[in-house]
Length: 371
Image 1 (tube, rainbow, N blue to C red):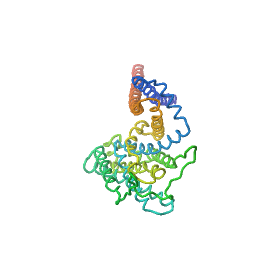
Image 2 (cartoon, rainbow, N blue to C red):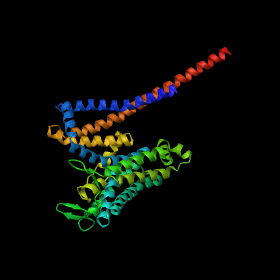
Image 3 (spheres, rainbow, N blue to C red):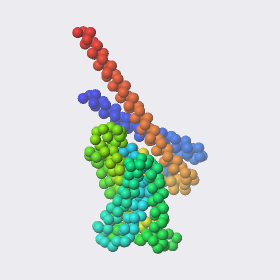
Image 4 (cartoon, rainbow, N blue to C red):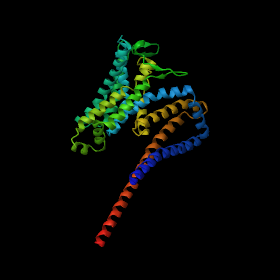
């Protein structure tokens, strides 16, 4: 019992050591980089803390973090399967586009129209990601290559249909799909000075579902097993090819949710100004959060905080690229710190096992001598 408690204590220490090491390293490296530019790093941190603590900034950060978090979830599903779904950006964009087209062509009560729009986005995202999964299991095409190509193809499809006279309509210098009716507007959580997207509830439910499926179901166990060793999973009776397609479909369906906070809560149409690049940000957030639903939520909030404070830093005379450098440094420090701690923990555990085996061998030798 004491040994188990000691092992749990060591595990807890190692678990806390990794993020602490990452934070210290990130702050140190970032401070050096800012100092090299001729600016005071401590003043930069003060500006970020003051501006980020304002109520309007907090609401903005939460709203920004919602699509970031959904994107990270979509990426993490692939990561747990040892698949690198780099196509989340294309998947959520083409999903949002067709969901906007379907929603703009409907006139129905909100309790019907909103679910139809969301389901449409999830189905389109699932189909688009499923193509990459199908290519992988049938033709051996690496998912990185296929999803990059699908990103380009998806952008071309959107560009073709999003034209005046096709599925788009021109309004000034902008072209967008028909505006969604008021019944398709998602609810908001009233806060001051601005409301929080109601889609934060959907994001929380998606995170809970992600945790439950991966950690409390047979499917999640099989998925993680395939990610760790395909040969071992196949030997235990798991259909690896089916799991690859299924995980890509689930990843794409989750990616379909990424554009919904913007579509149903901000723009109410898909236009040439629809946000892009969220899928690639999700990769960084998934790495930063270690594919953990809570960790990714904190990472998404951190990313939103850095995005929000970047404008204020620029007003203070800091280079615009500083925040981008900070984001990259944080991700690198987290990845390196966790790997260092993992290797240290593994080495420590191996040494303890060796010491226990050696002690048992000595006892056995003494018993034989006394006999």
